[in-house]
Image 1 (cartoon, rainbow, N blue to C red):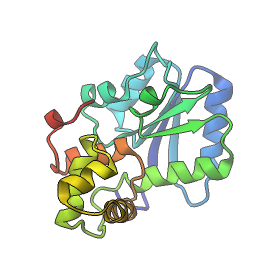
Image 2 (cartoon, rainbow, N blue to C red; image 1 turned 90 degrees about the vertical axis):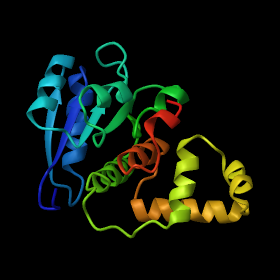
Image 3 (cartoon, rainbow, N blue to C red; image 1 turned 30 degrees about the vertical axis):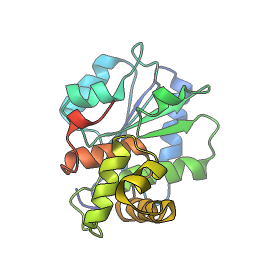
Length: 199
C-alpha cells in the first residue's frame, strides 16, 4: 500500500452516536486519507472484511456478544489488520491486551489522532524501515514470550538499562507501541512461532 492510498477503516459499533462520533473524529485527523465504513452487525463486518481487507477495525468489545480480536484475525486470515477497542467504561486489562490499541470515549482528538496514526503507519509492512539488529530481534522474541525486562537482561547477560534502550529503539524503528502489535509483527516476520506464544 502506498502512502497515497486510503486507509480502510471500519467502525463496528451499534450505537449511532459513538459510531458517528468516531467517524467524525477520524475525518478531522490532519493528513490522514481514510475510507471509513460504519457497520452495526457482525454479518456486516464479515461482508465488509471479505469485500476489502480493513487496515483498522475500531470495535466495541461487546460487539456481537464478546468480540475476540485474536480469533477474528485467525478466522479471517487477517494478521495485519489492526483492531482497536472502544472503551466506554474501564476495560479489563486482560481483555485490553488482546487489542492493538484502546481508544476511550473520553479521549481528546489529539490522543485519538496519535493512536490512529501510529496504527496506520504500522499498516505499511513493505515500506523501507530501519532494519533491526540480531540482538533487537532476540529481544523481541523474549518480549512476545512474556519475559520482563529484568528476565531478558538476566537471560542475555545484559543490564536492564541496555534492554530498555533496545526496546525503545525497537519501538522507534518499527513504530509499534503495543505488545500485541509487536507480537503480530514477530509472527508475520517469523521471529517467533505462534506456538511459542501464550495467548
